[in-house]
Length: 404
Image (cartoon, rainbow, N blue to C red; front, side, top):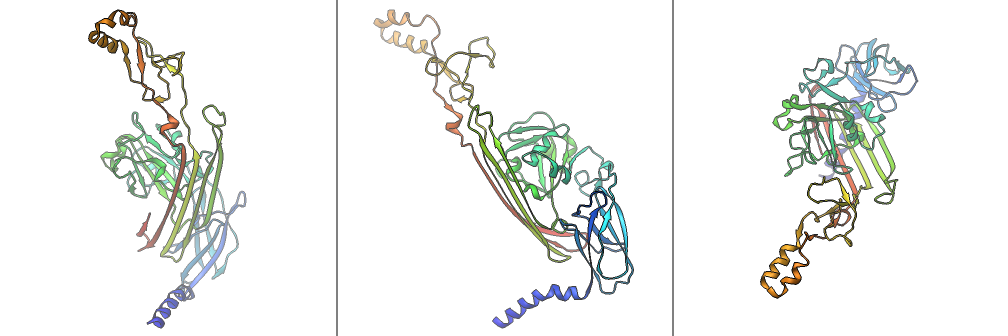
């Protein structure tokens, strides 16, 4: 039995080599004609056929063709931002470096949010705001969710470093139940909360290919839960984006030292993807965000006197003002007039009434002690995300995927 298992395992290991021996392999490298830099994720296909592959992050590609392929053949190279290039290949082996010329792609970007099928953005029946891979890569923001703040018609509520609520219609608090956030076709709202929790449960930034935003009622295509908009986040296909990549973002927070001492910010991401064959590929990702979040510590005394506005302040602290109401002190909003208590005592003890009458001439307001934000909130933010997927192509146009 053990010999049979070893033989089966050896056969599986040799299977890719056996398959490759029956195919014709063409390899090469793709670069930009302008700067000479290597181009990743470039589509490499056989003209008039469905056989194809993508370049890795160093621009290298390996195209496998059936052994019965008749040469010469024409290979097509295409990528967003570059014109389609056709190269005639006389036989199997290694090609020389292929150069692609940059070209204008206004309106050529493909979106899937408008009709749930790939559609050019100019042909979309509704208005769509799209954040491309290049925009995510070049953004100086700490997190790709921060980029949504700059999109047209967006209102963002940042409850913490990792909990950011997006809306496109009206106002929202930290929990928008009428905004749908979909990752690779799946609604990722938090169970029991009935709303999406921003980037807490979203993709690793290195695994994000694009974001597409449908504003307002145009998102009804995804159900009544998206009355305030729908945000689609698309991950990178391991067939197309292969290899090991990592990203380090470090910074400094609270540099003014007003409410708390300066503290470091760490955002580390890693991604690995491998195309095992033309049918099977896999990937895994990991990410860590660690920082000390902001704490509100404004202790100014809010003036709650009749006729005053909430944002007006008055001198005083807890030790000098019995009716103290600190702006960022919680639980001290409720107060009581002590005259009510003293008058009750005077009614029960008439012999004290003359003395009590000297104390109850004006309102005698007192408030509860309350709690500061640092006493009820832990500002230490640690967000660790681990994900991955197994991808298998049933046909050239149908792909089965499982992951988390």
